[in-house]
Image (spheres, rainbow, N blue to C red):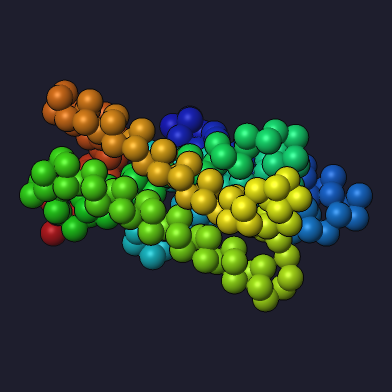
Length: 216
């Protein structure tokens, strides 16, 4: 029962991905079928692989990854949310800013640097890390467009609308920055309450870490 409660989201996302596999198989849409197959593989295997390589990710961080992959890969690319909702891409980029901030927090806590950091230093580094990740993603998209002739950065769409060619790229990065800034504001508020929220989100990892040290 505890397992079902912890991984209900994973089960739901996997079932939806399986439904997508059958649906797009019958419609011979190979690209969307491939996205759903990735979902069927990633959702149930992500946690076991983390355990296999001894990467103890907090359950809350795993959930963020699950929602981000589901929103982008399954809803966005497979079921056409990018076309149905003009704001879907912006929402995911904003959410990416939140995920990147929490990943950085996890890394700093993992190497035990959090307690030595001033909150403003932490926020500055979080924002810098988020922008670096957003930049790397845009470089990846540009490289993919250059190599295979695609237009994932919507350069043609931007120029047809009379916008600058880099409009989509810069918008994506700025929205990721907004996500990071909102996360930073929440951390500042949380600081006034002795980091109760961040400690709660990080609690499952700290319990695992404590158990490992006790075994030693």
